[in-house]
Image (tube, rainbow, N blue to C red; front, side, top):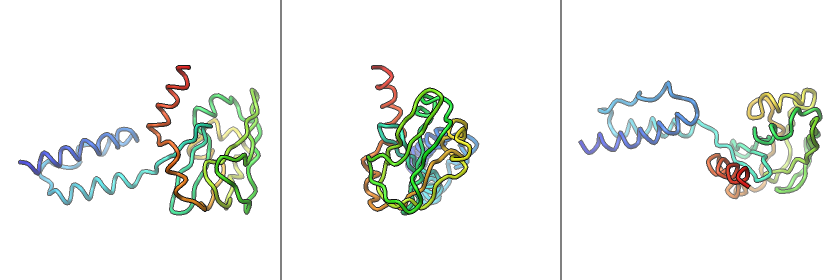
Length: 176
């Protein structure tokens, strides 16, 4: 009986994670009688399949895969900018520093500098975004990413906001 309660608690935690990422199709797939080790293995696998996005207070985001960070701007930022018409990205091979300007975005409403959320060497830029800047407006988290950087200081990510903290930050910003 005690093991079943523990599995249910773990399943609720996993369910919250799955729901927040739109994976309601997987909820309820861990039967109550599943051995504890099997349930934990399933939940651990599910948790690590998702990629965590980290945010700055300037509305840039970064996801990290090993030593490579992929950088973009948030949905909030693209919405505030309006229709993006021009993108200036850092050159491949250039070294960028966290908190420093590394590019620019221009829209029909405004121009905005792009501030790097991490330090490292630029290893790729999204040429599709340079030729079709509107990708930022239509798919800022998927097709509208801006550049990839080989991280020189992976621990810098720890100073950024996770998605929950960023959403709280946005609510507080909008309240003022």
